[in-house]
Image (tube, rainbow, N blue to C red; front, side, top):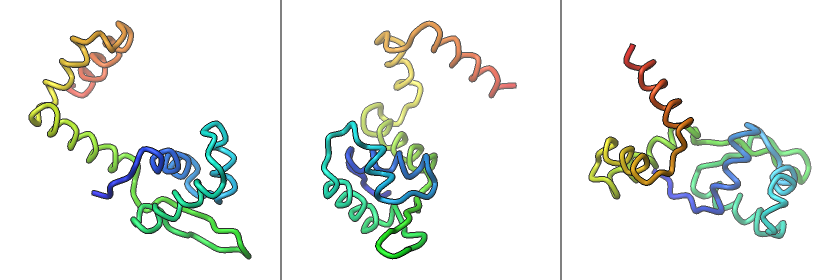
Length: 121
């Protein structure tokens, strides 16, 4: 699995959401992070090197970027690794940890239970 830093994930979130995006559009969406433009361009370059992002087209000096890894697949692998590392590979243990730590609201628990029941059917 490609190792993506926390900062790179912020860029990936924009690319995953937009599907095709220029560096200027990424910069505009990440204004709240107080990163300068060169930092964001460096992050994009790292993601290209890692083959997480590709260049779909080039018009003059403007590049359009696309994700080369699927968001749901990345999240699934990352979650599986986390469960393996912290919960001995047990999804049940991880879920109970969240429930026991009161990190989930009653509404979230009810929604989760409903989704589980829907999957069982």
